[in-house]
Image (cartoon, rainbow, N blue to C red):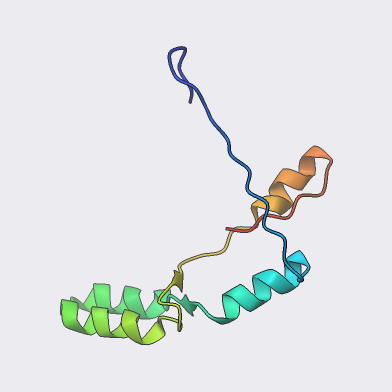
Length: 89
């Protein structure tokens, strides 16, 4: 929520690539790790030591060191307003 004495600022950055959006997303996601949420939940439920949790997460990290925790297709939701928007988080 923006209050009267605040401002909401949006910035748009355009990066031109040789890839169409879908291919760009696929290529990016191919080099990042994915959280194994069920494994983390099991370790949480059993009170696993932090070292085990850290090792499990580190083993799933991609070559970039980044990790995908979840995917939300914000564009699919925003497109309901009438214009096709490509945006995934």
